[in-house]
Length: 264
Figure 1: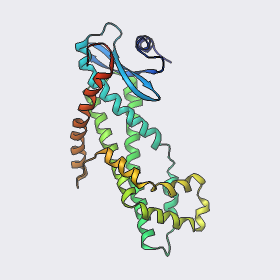
Figure 2: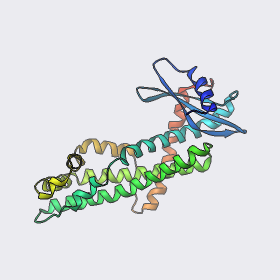
Figure 3: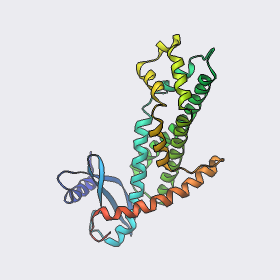
Figure 4: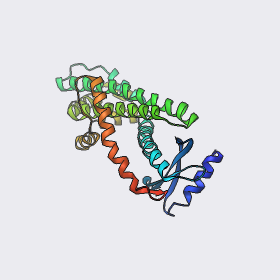
C-alpha cells in the first residue's frame, strides 16, 4: 500500500512518462538542505530508459545535482543485488549437496577432479549466498524502514556489490576452468544407482551448470574483477575499482534525466 508521499511523487512522475513506458519511484531518499529527494525511473521492456528527481515541494537544480549521483548509485547497485538475490537464493541447497553425497568409486582422475571442482563451486556459493542474505536483510529490515540513505549506506552497498562481484567471478572461474571435469563428474553420476534419487531439476542442474563456456567467459570478462592472491587485498582493489568504473556511468546517466530540466 502506497503512502501519501509515494502517491504524490508518482503523480508528478507520470507527467513525464511516455505512453509506452512504465514508471516507478524508488522508496529511498537523499537529504539536501533538509529537503528529501527521490528518484523516479522510466522503463521500456523492463529496461531503464530515463530518470527524474523529485521532492514533495519545488525542486531546485543545484540540489538535484547533489542528490542525483547518490540516489542513482544506490539504485543501480541495490537493483543488481536484489536481482542476484532473487535468482540465486531460490536455488535449493540439494542441487549442490545431493550430487556431492554420491560416492565416487573407481572413477577416472578427471571425474575426481570434477567432483573436487564442484565441491569448490559449492563452497563459493555458500559464501556468495550469505552475502546476498545479509544484503537482503539490510535492505528489507533497515533501508526500507528508515528510507533515508546516507554516505554510510553508499559505503555499505558498495561493499556488498564488491563481494558479490568477487564471488560471481570465482564462480565463473571454476566453471570455465573446470567445466570439462565437472561434466565428466555429472556423466559419472548418471551411471550410479544413486542417480535415480535426484529430482529432475537436480539432474538438470548438475548436467548443465558447466555448459556454455564461451558465454560464461564473456560474463566473467564483463565483470572486470581485479585478482589478487590475498582476499582482503582483492576486496580493496575492487572497491576502488568499482568507484572509478561507476563514476563515469553515473555521470553519463545525466543526459537521460527528464526532470528537472537543466541537469545534463
